[in-house]
Amino acid sequence: FKVVTQSTSPYTDQKPGTSGLRKKVTVFQQPNYLHNFVQATFNALSIEKVKGSTIVISGDGRYFSKDAIQIIIKLSAANGVRRVWIGQDGLLSTPAVSAVIRNRVGSDGEKAFGAFILTASHNPGGPHEDFGIKYNSENGGPALEGLTNKMYDLTKTIKEYLIAEDLPNVDISSIGTTSFRGPEGAFEVEVFDATEDYVNLLKTIFDFEAIKNLLARPDFSFCYDALHGVAGVYAKKIFIDELSADESSLLNCVPKEDFGGGHPDPNLTYAKELVARMGLSKAAPVSEPPEFGAAADGDADRNMILGKRFFVTPSDSVAIIAANAIGSIPYFNSGLKGVARSMPTSAALDVVAKNLNLKFFEVPTGWKFFGNLMDAGLCSVCGEESFGTGSDHIREKDGIWAVLAWLSILAHRNKNVSADSKLVTVEDVVRQHWATYGRHFYTRYDYENVDADAAKELMAHLVKLQSSLPEVSKLIKQVRPDVADVEKADEFEYKDPVDGSISSHQGIRYLFQDGSRLVFRLSGTGSEGATIRLYIEQYQSDSTKIGTEAQDALAPLVKVALSLSKMQEFTGRSSPTVIT
Ligand code: VG1
Ligand code: CO
Image 1 (cartoon, rainbow, N blue to C red):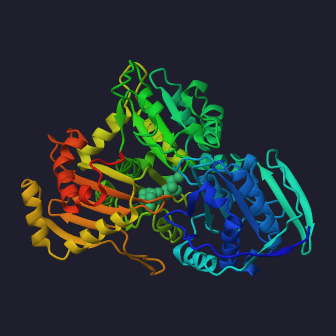
Image 2: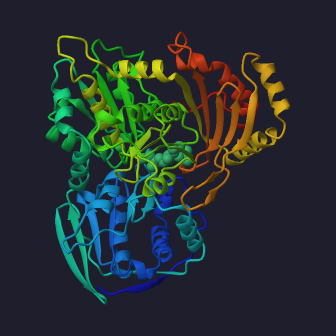
């Protein structure tokens, strides 16, 4: 093939958000839009480093992925990449990409330098929906802000890109290697089994035999919903082939370009089928729901864990995994190096860390901040309230890992429970946890696609309010005299303990005297308008009160949050789009 230098003009909107660049497919289809971003990434990495390297390109299979993969192959070839690795059909979950970067070794001993992950995660897919691209670095984790800022700067001035225009499209549907010759020598495209590296890694972490025995119990039943995302590929391999679960336990496990028209976000609103099957839908009651249910998002890094008629909040989930890891999960048998959560995630994990005397970190929203801690050996288990849980086995959150972690805990708890006595259930595990550590009532209100200026004004109003706490307390007392006073209010800022970098404006916090918290943030993953996230949390250690319904327990704080922020006044919304 020949290398052609094409001239191009910059786009002004290519700033990566919380997790890569996410836009409508139609935006990505503009002339040179994807080309510019990929070339800017290569330039930011430095062309010397890109030359001769191995790069992974794959994603969740959403609409436009197939076209994007062929374009990125041609750009990679022209920029001197030596080898491209692609999961069969262009599919690799985000955690699998991380595993491939960290663990896959090529025929001549080489490893991957980085990856382009093609996904917009939990956002819908299709010709009129979202596409996304994210670059992951050599440690298997999302590019850090230093790199993404550099990429963004370069997209604003880009004048040309290099492309191998005459390189034929590569067949990515079958496993095998295709070789080409360019001006600088050989260029290879290797298509491999998407499950291989990832499943091998998971087998070194969990006791598959113990999980298999749990799934085989007559009193246990299981259900997994991939919401037509890429998790389906792994679910078949792991739950059916490896763990011998019944085919009928898989829902929506065929990956689709448009996720079957759904919203591939594993929460109580969007994972409707699973929620109904688990007996959590008032409109569609079922007589005998499964004991365990779980769902994933489009790129399979998120998870939702459900018991029979029972929802586990993601903030509780990470705390419970941390509290039970040792003994249940062989990978952790030598102990936990530390634990971490994102700032808006509830403090349930903090209490576990304190009790078990573990190192603890609070980082801004987005998985990239956990990576440095893990690379430095400071953190083993971490999580976010947004249905993200994971560990230092890779540098991304991991949806299937979380499911296997829960199954491991249940297997361990039921090890000595015979099939004719009562099974220890998901609900039992959670209630016992609350009884030991207290309960953090938690809810998140999302206001999606709000007018961007209105959202900014609301945030500015909340920051301004922070300058007078007596004033805030007065306002609160007018609405709910039973709510505690605000003790501290600020904008969260994080100093990375490893590299010293500072991330500011990471969310507006109101911290109450009784440990309750209100947090306000603007989403960095949307593709139009603004999304306001309101996080509400209250701690309860009184054992007679921990059984209350979350929405009832939190009602006073919700009222305070809506009134302090003047939500309806600024946004015109009387209720949120999604409550989780
Ligand atoms: C959201 C979540 C955040 C998560 C991010 C990426 O970001 O709140 O916790 O890390 O999505 O998840 P934001 O900026 O919209 O609040 V995923 O599954 O899109 O990689
Ligand atoms: Co995701």
